[in-house]
Image (tube, rainbow, N blue to C red; front, side, top):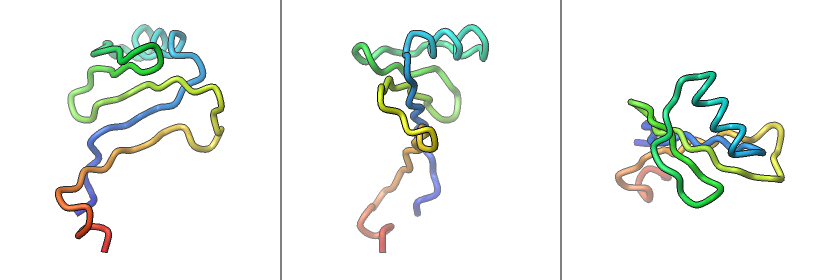
Length: 76
């Protein structure tokens, strides 16, 4: 069943500024950097990933990862 969100990805224009906002203003902690454009933040329930993109769509910058044990079956 496709009802379990397993990760939330947020597309940002500037990773350095976004990490500063999420850590200093919102109180998150950095978990791990994955190269120069992706960072995961510590969060108890759903991992939050910040991903730098230069061509952002103002209406489409949060992506939810949904977990499935059997994607073929769940997509029917």
